[in-house]
Length: 104
Image (cartoon, rainbow, N blue to C red; front, top):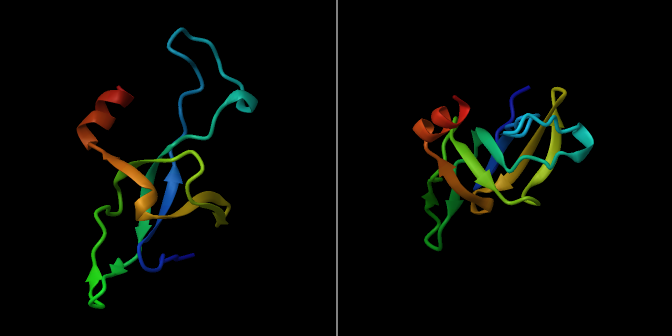
């Protein structure tokens, strides 16, 4: 199913955190917090300013972003849990090089 957010909204897929701590302790699902990091998978065209012109979004598809714990609205599309949120709910974009170093 194709989904296109409207205005300044974005569609985000949460990126799951590790199931172990650095010390090797396994964290059960019931004790995990929802991740506050995600990947943008769709964006709207942008918001309109007072002159009626569309202002493009700063985030783009494929960006890794950080957002607030209670940001967005949870939805389910094609069996996958996703978030729809306004671009203003995004706190920042994670640099791709930093994300690669974190994963390694």
